[in-house]
Image: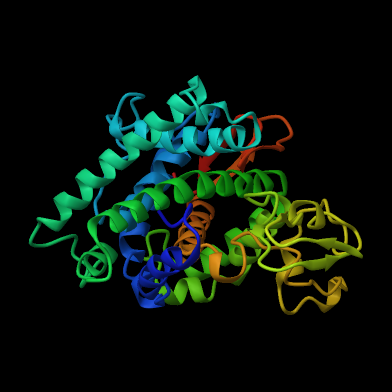
Length: 374
């Protein structure tokens, strides 16, 4: 398990997976399948009532995560898989349960170390279910002669790596479910919330989508994403206003001096990027949604120079998000497809976040979508 390990064993496993995940060509290999899933999702959006889209978003990103983790199409957006007791829904619930309980168990009285508390029992059951499904899928795919039509999938590369055993691959798959479903679901929720409340920004993004995809059904390619500069700015601005976590936690390897205070080796230090992201000394109009601040040709706005360490949505250094390229690609494809085919408005209350290890929207995602090509 890459998320929870430390030291030389962590680095050994991280290094092997990173060799594969850091190659841009391996990420692009999933673009065609990603686009097909997102097109199905967009068709569903135009028929949904503005109740709460969070569940539908979760099913979308579970499907996209499983494409990468298991090289399998889960059909998570089907009516059958949207049922509360389906495999997809149970995996989503298991990931949410894990992410929401870890902080409570770590920060509260650790009596679960001596006997199984109700919260720890829920965590154990959630983890066991995810591991059970991951093991089942990995073994199933290992025994297949041919995986999905890619030249070579990530899973194939992992299974052929003599430096990794089946436990490492299953652990990585579980990590991707834990770190991939909720994080992208919540980030997309906040992105659409801001776009729905800022019509001019939404229209700018729609103009870029129309320019890049001359036909609503034009395929999204690597070249498309390379030129999607405003789309990327929208994502950056979303992650500034609503980062997925409060900051970056690290255990100090040496004594350091911070603001005149000596902090000893072994101390857990957490940066407060969520606070820094909204301070006026770092950003003009810090509470406004202004993707333009991230564009290079931004002289007209006279924006403050942005320190790269103020916004760290994917972490920094050796422990930064290993699947960052996939997360960004998925978010870009979803935003381009939605804005090219749909216009949407916000129907809910003002949205904020509640931190359950990662930051979750504190209310329902109430959006109304209207097809542009009806």
